[in-house]
Amino acid sequence: MHVLVTGGAGYIGSHTVLLLLEEGHTVSVLDNFSNSSPESLLRVQKLTDRAVEVYEADLLDRDELHGIVMRSRPDAVIHFAGLKAVGESVSEPLLYYRNNVVGTLNLLDAMSAAGCKKLVFSSSATVYGDSVELPLLETTVRSATNPYGRTKLHIEEMLEELGASNPQWSIANLRYFNPVGAHESGQIGEDPQGVPNNLMPFVAQVAIGKREKVNIFGDDYATADGTGVRDYIHVMDLAAGHLAALNYLSTHKGVNAWNLGTGHGTSVLEVIQAFARVSKRDVPYKVVERRPGDVAESYAHPEKAMLDLGWKAERGLEQMVEDMWRWQEQNPDGYRQNV
Image (cartoon, rainbow, N blue to C red; front, top):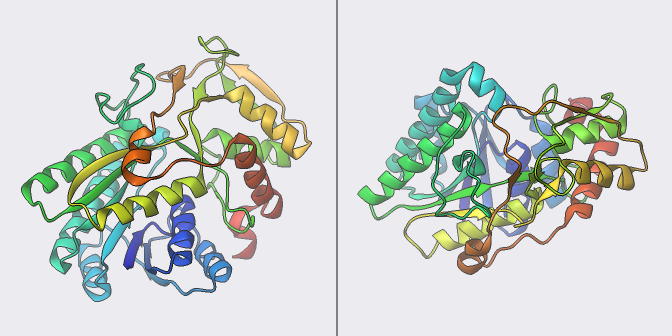
């Protein structure tokens, strides 16, 4: 199958491209490299000994996008491209609506023109808002507490309405929880620009000595150790979920949604302790005030993905941390050291 991957040079995108190539698929990547590096794709090609067709382009450039999709004629699209920082989305909401929603609309128009009607969409557990219903099911009422989450929810609804209007479409909305870890080679991994927005890469940077300490936002939650609990999923398990969804779309029409998570919560303190154990380094931390909008716990009910897709997360916390630490040690400055 020929798969076009938007945002394929990014963290989750590059790991998914690697698996696609290993499975024998032909892959084209479309990326504007605003928050990613071409180096990730060079490494993917080296690891797999397979070539990737790369288009440097932006989804907001409607004419160029149409030309690329018409020329490449993919059988399916996996759509990662988009902005993803919650805090930035609050300060610049229009930027997020323009990039994420309008960019997706342009992509759907280009796919329609090229006769491609299979799409795997990178959604998020943020579509569940601040729901306290646990575990989170695909049927949990959706809402959003910030512009980033709202863009994901708008796109899901747009895709549902598209599927209802045209039964030829096959669409997967993958709601994933907290991606962490790296490829076991240590050659590709998460390379945040500036201060990491997510816990695990921040902890990794403290362990390597790039940052002084981890701030724990509240230790008085109603959890086992008082710190927030989240469902962390290894990026390679997440990538495998995209391939499983792609296989499903080959034989099923319509629009479906699946949670991609482990179904188990891990606390902030447990993540810090695991990093200290694996890295054999001190990971200093300081408890500070809670952040507005943070919930005590959030974790998936992943059974639907197992039943429909035959997929489940295989890697536990220890492997997540081991793989992320290997990537951090080998690439203390991310991909930039090679650019």
